[in-house]
Image (cartoon, rainbow, N blue to C red; front, side):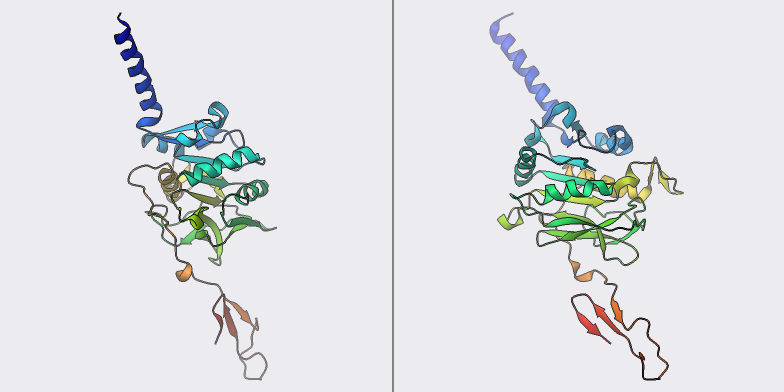
Length: 291
């Protein structure tokens, strides 16, 4: 065989391998070295990704070498702190337009997640604030932010949620737990918005344990409630860059329509015309007292 023809064949094989690995697919890097469960527990969600031509690779097998060739990094319930080297890699990835999904299922992950989010070099401006009590309230209200909330009525798989997400100027909550609708459990952050760069972003979701275990439901498909399944799929497919699931640049949900559960004083009040505590005033957060 002539050298020229052999060279052509070798280059063709390399091109085909590259196309198969990175050219025609969307790629997710899952950090399964720092995780609460084996990757197989997300079988249904992994199948959804695969059906949309998304290849899920894992850090245990791939390392972080090909990070910049990925569309999305999936960090699920981290159980240890990231090194400064990995933090810098993730920041560069996000600054270059990469998407990061952080899912939390256990309160033991809070410190690891907060440490990553507060690393100098980016401004995520969101942190998890833990509570001592556990809440299994369903997620039944959100600010519409397409495609994350498309075709979703209510999410029951988010729980227990023993914390909330506090957001600063570059982060925006868009999903809230009952009973008061002010308990933010899902948020999006643009860590480089201050640089006028919103190509890369982070989605943080608390209480994703319901996506990892079988929860019986009269509306269930596989191991997920229909809406849980849709909500999780929308987020994964969007961050993976699948066509048809694009998010508007700098999609920022407005909190002006967020209902506020007011504080009231006195509580209780006794409207019996005895001149004591006959009237009640309600304090709406950020809007002052109203009759």
